[in-house]
Image 1 (cartoon, rainbow, N blue to C red):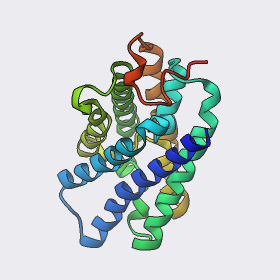
Image 2: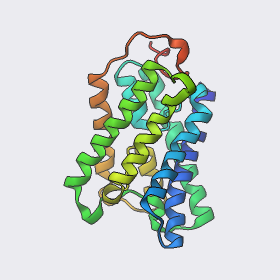
Image 3: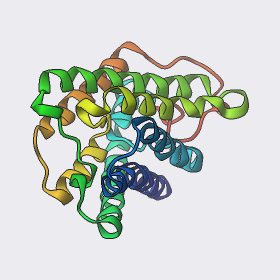
Length: 227
């Protein structure tokens, strides 16, 4: 278990460091095209998944861990330590961004544009549901020939960044929201992300139960931990 938690911490630190680091660097440069920002978030998720999926399952996200437990794919007793690793890693990643790039762009904190929570809430919920569905597809069907399915979660995050990033900052991840919020002191409408994101994850968990497939094709930290 300590190895898994360390992997979650390192992976989430990479995710937050690359993703929010790109936001802060973009602010320094005066902005970059949205498609490049989406590409940066694709890499922010894809790289730690590729590095850590065999060690921890590369959840990298408390909402994903919650959904995996809620659907019976992992045991509930795994959840607290996974979340501690993820939040701790997110704080490390955000702290690195602060140290290297400075406190610009609220360290990439997620805030609804124009305070429009009626648009932000369903947007975060819907794309979190899509992210969890991508994770479940990877969990239930395996990585696929050529390991192409490990690209599903980062693809959803990239699409979310492109579609709802201008509205919400595209969180889909409570740890990714909390770390820059805490370090930059930005708490505007943070409740949206801490409610809509877990709700979207749990909705998919309730509807999509695990199927019986060859567990040898799965990474650890997923359905083989079922009791």
